[in-house]
Length: 154
Image (tube, rainbow, N blue to C red; front, top):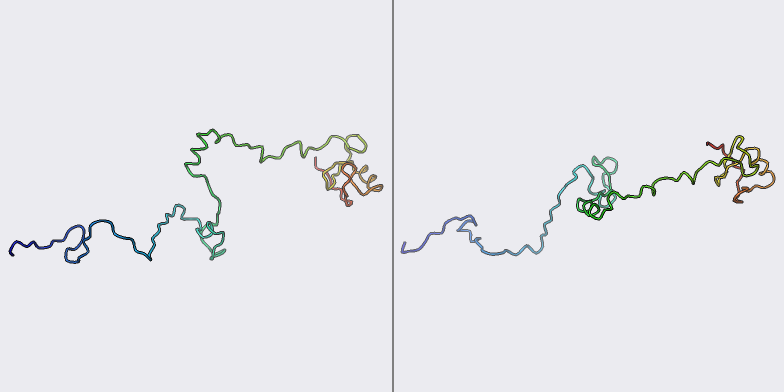
């Protein structure tokens, strides 16, 4: 009619609705949207984040709070050369610390039925009991033994 164009529906919306806007639209002021990707669906998220789960023992998910290195952390360690240089001696008990001595401190002879005190010193049973009659303290470090002499396993 007289050169007027009729409004048509487009991909942007319904032409008659008046919601055809061009340009950025302001975000709602009181509504905030977040997205949370669940990469581990078998782990209890509440327990992992807070250390507490409202379901308690009846929760069907795994209660695990351990963290693993991300891919970029592994690549960084590999690039810096630290990946295979982990010091395993920090986790091992040195044999020297808990080594069974070869002879009694009191008599100086090889052990005959060895016993160990609370302070981890080794003596022959007869020597330890004879020394205990004189003094209630260890012959090496002078700590109170309390009369406790355990059978040494060596």
